[in-house]
Image (tube, rainbow, N blue to C red; front, top):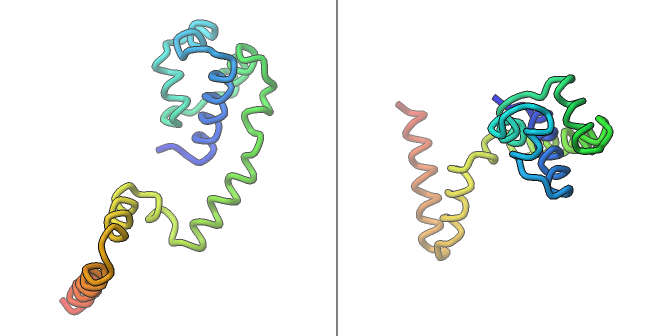
Length: 127
């Protein structure tokens, strides 16, 4: 599972690669790996080791610190969102889809759906 740090580093990697106009294939060739590995780094699926981060920074002509720029702020924002909004629940696609569908309803069906959801929650607690 990707951590917030892995995701941040991957986003910075993708941003720098695109800024230089490189494809994943071209960057991978420069550091001696397959382009699929670059894909995994960029989406945070695989962690970037210190040695690989050094190679990538050399290939992308950026200091290693570039990849960490903004990390503290990103982590603070994420923590604030989790604290204020219940955390991971709001980052799920299912939750976002449900909220979007809910607000596409007119007021009356929306109230009825909310009442239904509340009644199901109460029934679940009673069981």
